[in-house]
Image: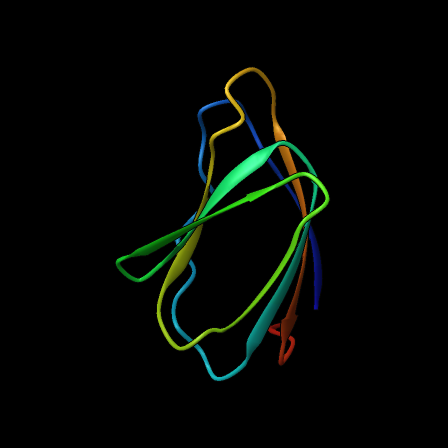
Length: 79
């Protein structure tokens, strides 16, 4: 399931519950913290990331002056 996510300056996404599956992401613009359970990882424009979705997760915009734009692909789809 592809998702194009825009996070406004100093904003964060909603919290996603743990699920059976995986998440791939690519940062199109800005910088974010990827918050997986109690761990945090930084990603910036042009970087990609991947993780098993076995704990809750969300994203924080740490760009400072602009919005962040991410392309996420989650499996299995949740439609």
